[in-house]
Length: 250
Image 1: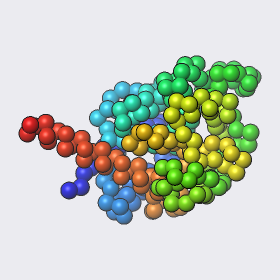
Image 2 (image 1 turned 135 degrees about the vertical axis):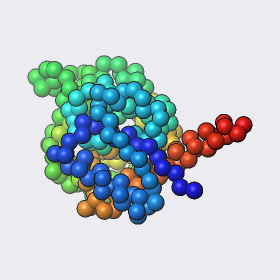
Image 3 (image 1 turned 90 degrees about the horizontal axis):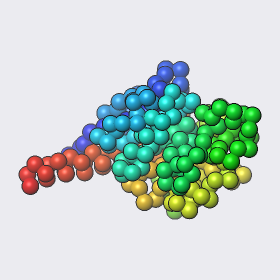
């Protein structure tokens, strides 16, 4: 039996964001090529902080600055604490780290420079977890080195991968050890060691990338990380349906 998974696409949907425009083709390819059926709903960031518990997966897509930082962080927390498959890409990666820092690593004042008044005038502020990159990655393509044995490496099937970016912000290295000490693993880096992938090994599927796997190829063959995320969503739907069935017959 195949199961249809309910997918929350969290972003301020815009046809002008290339990653957003790729989604319909990716969903069609997942269905026809992989047999993974996802019933997707675009959730505006203002509405994302509530009501996502009924979804089988949450994908925070690019498009920052988001209209509601609080909504995005609420969506990440719902997925992280609820064991719901989660994928965060570009801005989604940045906000996944921000949510973890505030709610799991004890950095309650952690901030994102893009969303913080005065951050450009005070770039050395101690509370900035997400800071401007030394060199913008908008429109860039670069190699990501994967940690052997990590979820990302297993799914991609290699120790390096060439990925596309469209971002100006990334994590502040000064805070990464604090996040590591609370269970977040950084399993992909650029050639200089800068973090590009984060994951929670204890979670059913929690993975975030600074690069944009939705821009992989021409969109007809989903990136391995997107395919794996979709498969996790379908598994979640199957387990949820089984629990409902058992409850009705028990």
